[in-house]
Amino acid sequence: MAQILDSEAFKKVVKGLEDDLISSWRQCPDPAAPNAILMGHKLQALDSLLNSMRTIVNTGKIAARQLESTRGKEKH
Image (cartoon, rainbow, N blue to C red; front, side):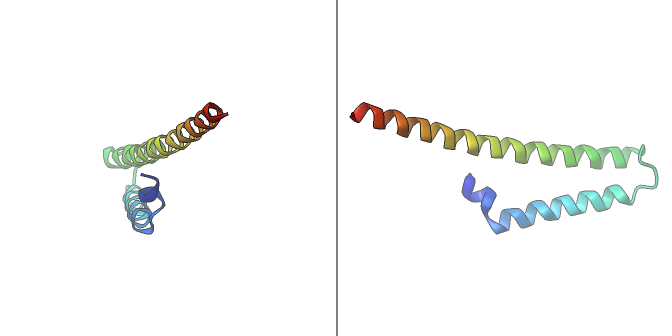
């Protein structure tokens, strides 16, 4: 998953989604309009998804380091 998050293609897609959502939000004349609220929720959902993916990657990296450390101690 780390490779996906770091890939230029993925970054380009995410940036495109963010730009489209922000553009749609800005076009709403009333920030309290249902469409403006929906765009805000979609932006929050995208951010939450990306944060969850980063957390999974970072947790995996930490677990791999801990496992490596444990294996190193067992050899001594």
